Amino acid sequence: MATEKLAAVECIDVRRDFQDGSRIIKVLQGTNLTVFRGEFVAIVGASGSGKTTLLNLIGGLDTPTSGTILVDGQDITKLNDDAMSEVRRHKIGVLFQDQHLLPIFTALENVEVPMLLDNIPAEERRERAMKLLETVLVSHRFQHMPHELSGGMRSRVALARALANDPAVLLCDEPTGDLDHKTGGEIIQLMRDLAKNQNRAVIAATHDPETARMADRILLLRDGVLVDELVGDFFKTSGVDVGTRKEYRKSTTKERID
Ligand SMILES: Nc1ncnc2c1ncn2[C@@H]1O[C@H](COP(=O)(O)OP(=O)(O)OP(=O)(O)O)[C@@H](O)[C@H]1O
Ligand SMILES: [Mg+2]
Image (cartoon, rainbow, N blue to C red; front, side):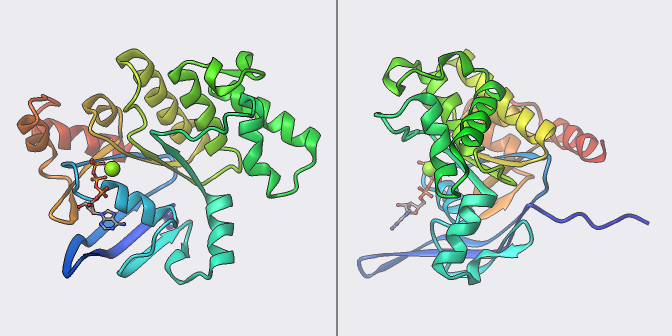
Protein backbone atom coordinates (compact mmCIF):
# COMPACT_ATOMS: atom_id res chain seq x y z
CA MET A 1 0.00 0.00 0.00
CA ALA A 2 1.36 3.40 -0.91
CA THR A 3 2.26 5.57 2.05
CA GLU A 4 1.05 9.13 1.91
CA LYS A 5 3.88 11.56 1.33
CA LEU A 6 3.91 14.71 3.41
CA ALA A 7 4.15 17.84 1.29
CA ALA A 8 6.96 20.24 2.20
CA VAL A 9 4.75 23.17 1.18
CA GLU A 10 1.01 23.30 0.84
CA CYS A 11 -0.93 26.47 0.08
CA ILE A 12 -4.69 26.09 0.25
CA ASP A 13 -6.95 28.82 -1.12
CA VAL A 14 -4.46 31.53 -0.18
CA ARG A 15 -5.60 35.11 -0.60
CA ARG A 16 -3.60 38.27 -0.07
CA ASP A 17 -5.10 41.72 -0.44
CA PHE A 18 -3.18 44.93 -0.09
CA GLN A 19 -4.68 48.27 0.81
CA ASP A 20 -3.60 51.06 -1.53
CA GLY A 21 -5.19 54.22 -0.16
CA SER A 22 -8.92 53.64 -0.46
CA ARG A 23 -8.38 50.87 -3.02
CA ILE A 24 -7.93 47.18 -2.24
CA ILE A 25 -5.56 45.29 -4.53
CA LYS A 26 -6.39 41.61 -4.66
CA VAL A 27 -3.05 40.01 -5.49
CA LEU A 28 -3.52 36.36 -4.59
CA GLN A 29 -7.09 35.23 -5.10
CA GLY A 30 -7.29 31.63 -4.00
CA THR A 31 -3.86 30.26 -4.83
CA ASN A 32 -3.24 26.55 -4.36
CA LEU A 33 0.17 24.92 -4.43
CA THR A 34 1.66 21.62 -3.27
CA VAL A 35 5.40 20.98 -3.44
CA PHE A 36 7.10 17.83 -2.21
CA ARG A 37 10.66 17.37 -1.03
CA GLY A 38 12.88 16.55 -3.98
CA GLU A 39 10.91 18.80 -6.32
CA PHE A 40 12.14 21.92 -8.06
CA VAL A 41 9.21 24.15 -9.01
CA ALA A 42 9.45 27.38 -11.00
CA ILE A 43 6.84 30.10 -10.64
CA VAL A 44 6.57 32.47 -13.57
CA GLY A 45 4.20 35.32 -14.30
CA ALA A 46 4.06 38.94 -15.34
CA SER A 47 5.68 41.58 -13.19
CA GLY A 48 3.27 42.44 -10.39
CA SER A 49 1.41 39.12 -10.65
CA GLY A 50 2.31 38.27 -7.04
CA LYS A 51 5.31 35.89 -7.20
CA THR A 52 7.26 37.64 -4.46
CA THR A 53 4.08 38.05 -2.42
CA LEU A 54 3.56 34.29 -2.55
CA LEU A 55 7.17 33.50 -1.60
CA ASN A 56 6.99 35.96 1.30
CA LEU A 57 3.87 34.20 2.57
CA ILE A 58 5.42 30.73 2.31
CA GLY A 59 8.56 32.07 4.00
CA GLY A 60 6.52 33.43 6.89
CA LEU A 61 7.55 37.03 6.20
CA ASP A 62 3.95 38.03 5.59
CA THR A 63 0.52 36.73 6.60
CA PRO A 64 -2.25 35.84 4.15
CA THR A 65 -5.57 37.67 4.23
CA SER A 66 -7.14 34.19 4.31
CA GLY A 67 -6.25 30.61 3.51
CA THR A 68 -3.85 28.05 4.91
CA ILE A 69 -0.13 27.53 4.39
CA LEU A 70 1.50 24.35 5.67
CA VAL A 71 5.28 24.05 5.82
CA ASP A 72 6.50 20.53 6.51
CA GLY A 73 2.98 19.75 7.73
CA GLN A 74 2.77 22.68 10.13
CA ASP A 75 0.14 25.39 9.64
CA ILE A 76 2.25 28.56 9.73
CA THR A 77 -0.72 30.91 9.51
CA LYS A 78 -1.67 30.15 13.10
CA LEU A 79 1.70 30.63 14.78
CA ASN A 80 2.72 33.34 17.20
CA ASP A 81 5.88 35.35 16.48
CA ASP A 82 8.24 33.08 18.40
CA ALA A 83 6.93 29.90 16.82
CA MET A 84 7.07 31.57 13.41
CA SER A 85 10.73 32.58 13.86
CA GLU A 86 11.46 29.00 14.83
CA VAL A 87 9.92 27.71 11.58
CA ARG A 88 11.74 30.37 9.57
CA ARG A 89 15.05 29.41 11.14
CA HIS A 90 14.73 25.66 10.83
CA LYS A 91 12.45 24.83 7.93
CA ILE A 92 12.94 27.60 5.41
CA GLY A 93 15.96 28.88 3.52
CA VAL A 94 15.70 31.97 1.34
CA LEU A 95 17.79 33.14 -1.56
CA PHE A 96 16.84 36.51 -2.90
CA GLN A 97 18.37 38.36 -5.80
CA ASP A 98 19.75 41.03 -3.54
CA GLN A 99 21.82 38.66 -1.45
CA HIS A 100 22.33 40.78 1.65
CA LEU A 101 25.61 39.20 2.63
CA LEU A 102 27.03 41.03 5.62
CA PRO A 103 29.86 43.14 4.19
CA ILE A 104 32.12 43.03 7.25
CA PHE A 105 32.09 39.24 7.50
CA THR A 106 33.98 36.70 5.43
CA ALA A 107 32.20 34.17 3.23
CA LEU A 108 32.57 31.54 5.95
CA GLU A 109 31.28 33.82 8.69
CA ASN A 110 28.28 34.79 6.58
CA VAL A 111 27.29 31.13 6.35
CA GLU A 112 27.76 30.76 10.11
CA VAL A 113 25.41 33.63 10.98
CA PRO A 114 22.12 31.67 10.96
CA MET A 115 23.73 29.04 13.22
CA LEU A 116 24.62 31.65 15.84
CA LEU A 117 21.00 31.91 16.90
CA ASP A 118 20.99 28.19 17.64
CA ASN A 119 24.03 28.40 19.90
CA ILE A 120 25.92 25.80 17.89
CA PRO A 121 29.49 25.57 19.26
CA ALA A 122 32.06 27.52 17.23
CA GLU A 123 34.00 24.52 15.97
CA GLU A 124 30.91 22.66 14.74
CA ARG A 125 29.58 25.87 13.21
CA ARG A 126 32.79 26.41 11.28
CA GLU A 127 32.91 22.82 10.12
CA ARG A 128 29.30 22.87 8.92
CA ALA A 129 29.72 26.21 7.19
CA MET A 130 32.83 24.95 5.41
CA LYS A 131 30.98 21.83 4.22
CA LEU A 132 28.18 24.01 2.87
CA LEU A 133 30.67 26.17 1.00
CA GLU A 134 32.10 22.96 -0.44
CA THR A 135 28.62 21.87 -1.56
CA VAL A 136 28.20 25.09 -3.51
CA LEU A 137 31.78 24.91 -4.81
CA VAL A 138 33.15 28.08 -3.29
CA SER A 139 35.07 26.79 -0.25
CA HIS A 140 38.38 27.96 -1.71
CA ARG A 141 37.22 31.56 -1.14
CA PHE A 142 36.09 31.05 2.45
CA GLN A 143 38.24 33.83 3.87
CA HIS A 144 37.20 36.42 1.32
CA MET A 145 34.96 39.36 2.06
CA PRO A 146 31.79 39.69 -0.08
CA HIS A 147 33.21 42.63 -2.06
CA GLU A 148 36.17 40.45 -3.08
CA LEU A 149 33.87 37.87 -4.65
CA SER A 150 32.22 37.82 -8.06
CA GLY A 151 28.42 38.01 -8.30
CA GLY A 152 28.24 34.27 -8.96
CA MET A 153 30.39 33.50 -5.94
CA ARG A 154 28.28 35.77 -3.75
CA SER A 155 25.20 33.88 -4.93
CA ARG A 156 26.86 30.61 -3.98
CA VAL A 157 27.71 31.94 -0.52
CA ALA A 158 24.13 33.18 -0.11
CA LEU A 159 22.92 29.74 -1.17
CA ALA A 160 25.18 28.09 1.42
CA ARG A 161 23.85 30.47 4.05
CA ALA A 162 20.26 29.66 3.06
CA LEU A 163 21.08 26.00 3.74
CA ALA A 164 22.77 26.64 7.08
CA ASN A 165 20.00 25.16 9.18
CA ASP A 166 19.14 22.32 6.84
CA PRO A 167 15.76 23.67 5.64
CA ALA A 168 13.05 21.50 4.12
CA VAL A 169 12.14 24.34 1.78
CA LEU A 170 14.37 26.64 -0.24
CA LEU A 171 12.69 29.78 -1.61
CA CYS A 172 14.45 31.68 -4.38
CA ASP A 173 13.27 35.01 -5.77
CA GLU A 174 14.85 35.83 -9.12
CA PRO A 175 17.95 33.85 -8.18
CA THR A 176 19.73 34.55 -11.45
CA GLY A 177 18.56 38.13 -11.97
CA ASP A 178 22.00 39.73 -11.60
CA LEU A 179 24.07 36.97 -13.12
CA ASP A 180 25.39 36.34 -16.60
CA HIS A 181 23.97 33.44 -18.57
CA LYS A 182 26.66 30.88 -17.71
CA THR A 183 26.91 31.74 -14.01
CA GLY A 184 23.12 31.83 -13.69
CA GLY A 185 22.94 28.39 -15.29
CA GLU A 186 25.42 27.04 -12.74
CA ILE A 187 23.37 28.41 -9.84
CA ILE A 188 20.20 26.85 -11.23
CA GLN A 189 21.96 23.52 -11.65
CA LEU A 190 23.03 23.76 -8.01
CA MET A 191 19.47 24.53 -6.92
CA ARG A 192 18.24 21.54 -8.86
CA ASP A 193 20.91 19.34 -7.25
CA LEU A 194 19.87 20.59 -3.82
CA ALA A 195 16.32 19.45 -4.52
CA LYS A 196 17.35 16.08 -5.92
CA ASN A 197 20.41 15.10 -3.86
CA GLN A 198 19.44 16.67 -0.57
CA ASN A 199 15.71 16.06 -0.83
CA ARG A 200 14.59 19.65 -0.36
CA ALA A 201 11.61 21.42 -1.90
CA VAL A 202 12.96 24.23 -4.07
CA ILE A 203 10.62 26.97 -5.29
CA ALA A 204 11.98 29.67 -7.58
CA ALA A 205 10.13 32.75 -8.80
CA THR A 206 11.66 33.80 -12.07
CA HIS A 207 11.33 35.66 -15.35
CA ASP A 208 14.16 33.63 -16.80
CA PRO A 209 13.13 30.87 -19.21
CA GLU A 210 16.41 29.00 -18.61
CA THR A 211 15.62 28.75 -14.91
CA ALA A 212 12.08 27.64 -15.64
CA ARG A 213 13.28 25.05 -18.13
CA MET A 214 15.36 23.32 -15.44
CA ALA A 215 12.37 22.92 -13.12
CA ASP A 216 10.31 19.76 -12.69
CA ARG A 217 7.18 21.86 -12.98
CA ILE A 218 6.52 25.37 -14.20
CA LEU A 219 3.49 27.15 -12.78
CA LEU A 220 2.10 30.42 -14.06
CA LEU A 221 0.72 32.95 -11.62
CA ARG A 222 -2.09 34.71 -13.42
CA ASP A 223 -5.12 36.54 -12.11
CA GLY A 224 -4.11 35.59 -8.57
CA VAL A 225 -4.02 31.83 -9.09
CA LEU A 226 -1.40 29.29 -10.17
CA VAL A 227 -2.05 27.36 -13.36
CA ASP A 228 0.08 24.99 -15.38
CA GLU A 229 -1.89 24.84 -18.64
CA LEU A 230 -0.95 28.29 -19.89
CA VAL A 231 2.79 28.24 -19.29
CA GLY A 232 3.72 27.57 -22.92
CA ASP A 233 1.51 30.47 -24.03
CA PHE A 234 3.08 32.75 -21.44
CA PHE A 235 6.56 32.10 -22.74
CA LYS A 236 5.44 32.37 -26.34
CA THR A 237 3.94 35.79 -25.75
CA SER A 238 7.23 36.71 -24.06
CA GLY A 239 8.96 35.71 -27.31
CA VAL A 240 10.55 32.59 -25.82
CA ASP A 241 10.02 29.07 -27.03
CA VAL A 242 10.07 26.50 -24.25
CA GLY A 243 8.35 23.88 -26.36
CA THR A 244 4.69 23.44 -26.99
CA ARG A 245 2.20 23.08 -24.22
CA LYS A 246 1.75 19.44 -25.15
CA GLU A 247 5.47 18.69 -24.93
CA TYR A 248 5.70 20.50 -21.64
CA ARG A 249 2.86 18.46 -20.18
CA LYS A 250 4.31 15.22 -21.50
CA SER A 251 7.72 15.78 -19.91
CA THR A 252 6.34 16.82 -16.54
CA THR A 253 4.03 13.84 -16.43
CA LYS A 254 6.95 11.52 -17.11
CA GLU A 255 9.09 13.21 -14.47
CA ARG A 256 6.31 12.97 -11.93
CA ILE A 257 6.02 9.27 -12.57
CA ASP A 258 9.82 8.83 -12.34
N1 LIG B 1 3.37 45.55 1.04
C1 LIG B 1 2.64 45.88 -0.02
N2 LIG B 1 1.72 46.89 0.05
C2 LIG B 1 0.96 47.20 -1.01
N3 LIG B 1 1.03 46.57 -2.20
C3 LIG B 1 1.91 45.57 -2.33
C4 LIG B 1 2.78 45.17 -1.25
N4 LIG B 1 3.54 44.14 -1.67
C5 LIG B 1 3.19 43.91 -2.95
N5 LIG B 1 2.22 44.77 -3.34
C6 LIG B 1 1.58 44.79 -4.66
O1 LIG B 1 1.24 43.46 -4.99
C7 LIG B 1 1.41 43.21 -6.38
C8 LIG B 1 2.30 42.00 -6.58
O2 LIG B 1 3.62 42.33 -6.24
P1 LIG B 1 4.81 41.26 -6.27
O3 LIG B 1 6.02 41.98 -5.84
O4 LIG B 1 4.41 40.07 -5.50
O5 LIG B 1 4.87 40.88 -7.82
P2 LIG B 1 5.94 40.00 -8.60
O6 LIG B 1 5.18 38.99 -9.40
O7 LIG B 1 6.96 39.48 -7.65
O8 LIG B 1 6.58 41.07 -9.59
P3 LIG B 1 8.08 41.12 -10.20
O9 LIG B 1 8.09 40.08 -11.29
O10 LIG B 1 8.17 42.50 -10.75
O11 LIG B 1 9.05 40.85 -9.11
C9 LIG B 1 1.94 44.52 -6.96
O12 LIG B 1 0.85 45.22 -7.48
C10 LIG B 1 2.51 45.22 -5.76
O13 LIG B 1 2.50 46.60 -5.95
MG1 LIG C 1 9.02 39.77 -7.45
